[in-house]
Image (cartoon, rainbow, N blue to C red; front, side, top):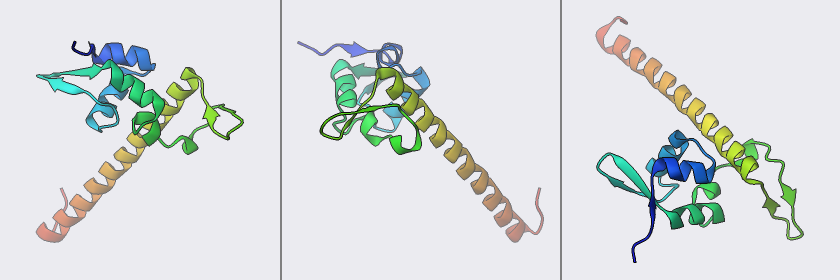
Length: 123
């Protein structure tokens, strides 16, 4: 019997994330999926892997950067509500996007400096 495959929209709804975030996690390897043509398909088991933290996306996001209002358990682990987890993922994605923008701006200024050095004037 074959495993049920979800669309990006279905996975996003179940994970309480935007479709953009799901696609970012798929491209980054944080969420398991297959690309068929232009469309991603995500096995249902991949959502379970991610939520369990077995190398999935919840394990790779740095929660230390955001407040999640988690409740501590007797063994010291933190239990988060789905909403708190979604908010933490969204905040971490936003932070990563800002950092990527900064790197791109730095690369553009480095390119401009190299262009000046090589050709003698900037555009």
